[in-house]
Structure formats: structure tokens, C-alpha cells
Image (cartoon, rainbow, N blue to C red):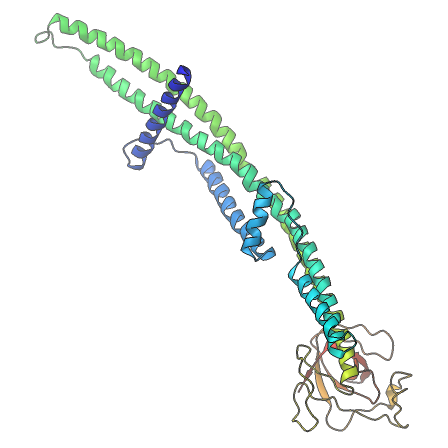
Length: 403
């Protein structure tokens, strides 16, 4: 118990002396050992890495989980070393509601059928979102957390030790400087005319004492310098490892981008498939019409309305034979017999590249402009497209009809 009390008192004295030394340095009343420029650059690079890693980590967590209460709950589970309970994503919850609504409205009704189709797509989107969140957490968030909770804590600890070693070194330098000044003052030659022999003896004794004090201060300075140099080297090696941390984080960033690309590609494909399904269903509910804007959900306007983006595509009868809804176009399409109307054709902008499956279809390039029209009995998911002398069937889901 006595030893512990002595150690506590000693630590308190060291802490107080360091605090005084640090305060005097800030006030410019004490000398400070400066680190070399390379070391300062390493410190600045480490601080910059830590600050931006914290910001990127936090914002990525917000991106993956916007709900702050859920993030706090997951953080507590992680700190308690317990498994985070599985949660339903927003897309999966929306899909559940849509399916339940479809069952109440009647799965055989047009609205019910559409709810089931959209609900299934939302479920697939929710699954893709879950996979993306899991992949991003393992491949991106965990490495960032490991750096902040592991490497950075070690660096911070060694930097604090280095700062204490520097304060001790500067204190030893100040102590040696004071001892040498006192020794020089004590060893000054006394004036025998005005100084008694007894005072001279005391002065010589004091000079010897200050010489011993100088030797002791020099020894403490050598020890402090050695400790400081050793700690500086340890800290330098840790700081130089920040470059390796950047390489590791770069690899993790590539994996994050790949998983995010996969997620958005899946979402795009799911929505494209849904758009085709809804286009086919819309053709069954509203035969002979097509809404050019895929984002519009309002019914097509009446034939007496002025032409708009959602106007009806002109219908052109086939030449040389009577139109037969059962066989026209869907059977053997003779493109040579198909001619565009004299007026009323529509211009369309191609949204995506399309590769023709056979000679009856027209290959498309994104952003090009073509002329389109429909034929009697034609599948509502297809139109006749013309580009110069080329002609063929084109899918309506790849087009944006212009007024």
C-alpha cells in the first residue's frame, strides 16, 4: 500500500511538471524540441486519414441505413457482441403490403394483377438491397472500422507517449541549463579583499555541489534523449504504415463500387422486366394505344384530344390484303408491303441500344431518332420503326415517343 501511494504521488508530480512545461511552451516561456519536417508530414497525413475515414464511414452508414435509431441499435448489438436481428428491407415491406392488397382487391382484377407484379419486383429489389448492404458492410465498412478502432488507437497511444518523452526531454534540457548557470555563478573567483576565508570555503563547496548537479542533469538528459529517440522511431514506423492503410482502403473502395454497381444493375434489370410486363398488361387493358412516357400512369387521352406525348400511334392498314388481326404482323410480316401513312407518323427517341433478333426487327442505337407507327392487330409491345431506308419491328419499351 505504501508503494502504491508513493507511485501515485510520483505520477502526480510528473503529470504536474509536464503540465507546467506544456503551458510554458504555449506561452513561449520554454524551449520546445521540434520534430523534423518529414515526421510532421507523417503526422499531418495520419490526422487527415483519420478525419476523412471517420466522415466516409459515417456517411456510408447513413447511405446503407438512413434510420438513425436502427443504426444506434446495431451499434449496441455490435458492442455487446450479439448477433444483429434480421430486418425486412423497405422494398420487401412494400412488396408484402402490395401482395396483401392484391389479395383483398382480388388477384384476378387488373389492379390486383398489377399489384402482384409490382410487389414481386419490389421483393426482388429488397433482396438485392439486402445483399448490397451485407457486401458493403463486410468489404468496406468493417475495414474502415478496424483501422479506427485498431491501428489508429495504437498510433494515438504511441503519439501520446512520444509527447510525454519530448516534454521530459525539454525539462531535462531546462534543468541542465539552470544547473550550468548556477555552477558558473558559484565557481566565480571571490574577492579576497572583501570576502572572508570562511565564505570562500563555502563558495568552493557550493561550486562542487553544482558540478555534481550538472553531471546528474547531463546523465538524465542522455537517458531522456535515448528514450525520446527510441519512441520517435516506433511512432515513425507506425505513421509510415498509413500508406499501406491507403492501399488497403483503395482495394476496399473498389469492392464497394463493384457491389454497388451490381446492385444498381440488378435494380435496373428488375424494373425493365416489370416495365415490359406492365406494357403488355396495359396493351390488354387499352388495346390499340400506347403511352409513350413510361413514367406516366394516367389512361391514354380520347381520340378527340389534341396530340400530346401520350397520344395514340397512327394505325396504317397493310397494302395488298385485308387486315386480319389474327395474322397481321404477328405471322409473317412482309415489310415491303408496309408503307407509312402520308401524315400522322410519330417521332421517337431510342432510350437504349437494341440488337435485332431477326430480319423482321430493326436494330437500335441509344439517343437516335426514328419514325414509328402501328399496324392493326399488332402486339402493343411492338411498333414499326423506320430509319432512312431501313424498316422493322421495334420494342416500345426502348422508345420515348415525342409529340
